[in-house]
Length: 381
Ligand SMILES: *Cc1c(COP(=O)(O)O)cnc(C)c1O
Image 1 (cartoon, rainbow, N blue to C red):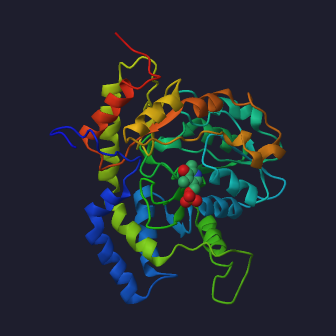
Image 2: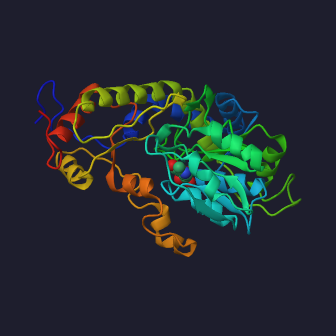
Image 3: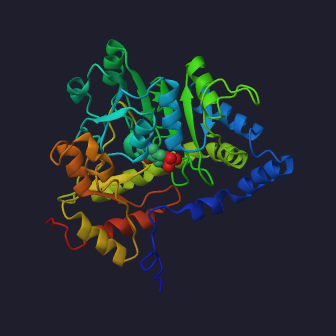
């Protein structure tokens, strides 16, 4: 039973893509219909138009649409000439795709720990991670907030390293007024459905100001062929399909409003959770604009709280419970527990609360109410 003025009893999912579709379904179906009528599924003008719009949105000369975010990272690194014998520096608290892309080129991922306030790459640790084999730094803009890119870009310039931004969680985030993805040699985006800008399937993109790099990535995504049956290099089928291009172009028009809604929900969470004793809230760094892809708090008895919330129909996420340096797939890299204390502490204590544009003020209030009375939470007052 639902009580008036209270959402008690309702399920609050972690992400609600159905609510988003209810708000824009008409526009999306219209865009899909055009693709069907033109039968423009592959090498589609709908993808080319999205590339133009997305490059303009990011403030870059080029956007090259590909088939996923993992693929975007892979072709960006390949396009920069990274391969066997090279090292790429990144962080252990990211989605696995970040390091799959590095490993697929044949290069070796080298981890550095993250900053305890932003949960992003701690540039003060870069010096000790750089070797003669280092070719690139791959900062991840985790949860919708960019890394402190200035010092990273400075160091990279001094040492002649490429910076490839993993902006898969940061569509529309800003660093000193510039959009995520536009500051490094290349910026890589995922349009996985649950991202701030999500496709109706798999999709990704690389943005860059570098004409030659954009050209190489266009070759790599299409069998290394500048024209049909003329293969000048090894490539892959890494193209975005026309339906995704058409849908993303529609959704891009809503991204600013959606990001603003996420920021509103984050503010409300912050106000309501402000005085809770043992909760560490996310912070917005003075250098930028956070777009809250994920709203992760840190609490000591995370698993207990998560179970309680689930029992009352509120679903949270964990980003990410096992840092990559401790994954079986990385044993050959030789890392051990204790190597990256901040990332490990985050993995133990992070809890990602429901956040999506269509969330209501009542739902945010209910999440906080249930959180505060959960077993495992310290009491204040
Ligand atoms: C989602 C994500 C990716 C990979 O994206 P896919 O489109 O799922 O391949 C890579 N890195 C980060 C940080 C992500 O969040």
